[in-house]
Image (tube, rainbow, N blue to C red; front, side):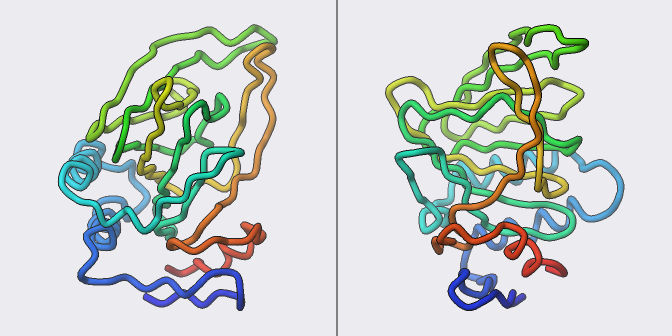
Length: 211
């Protein structure tokens, strides 16, 4: 399917039958389509198989010095697939997932996940599980489980594939010291491997409507 975007924003998106990452997005559509909660084991298996044997994600790699990068691979009404690149010392804020399901497959390096119990009534964040995911590992999170923080293992960098069912345009982040939440509207650094140049995320999302 071709997605028409404003000139200079990013190129049209076109799936390639020769690209295993594009074939993954087609397989995910079959599993994630509809109103019912996704079949978690089936989704995790697709991501695990891809992470174990494929490298068609490499054209989407985009590291930044100022922050981890969010690189859009595919977006439709049922899900959003992003490639995240983590330089040494970078970390996500503590955040939720706006009530959506989220899977993370580690493509390169090792990522650490830190769980926190969402604070209630002005209480401080309570640290929970800390787990490491090596290359090929797949993690799952939902707001009923915890809010969390993701970071690469100290002294290393990492690359991961993140699947959200449904797409997440805004979420809450939490101050690590006070637990105070704030709504954050998220965007992209690249789309289909092309730098967005700071384009308004709303324009990108509008272009992908109907995908």
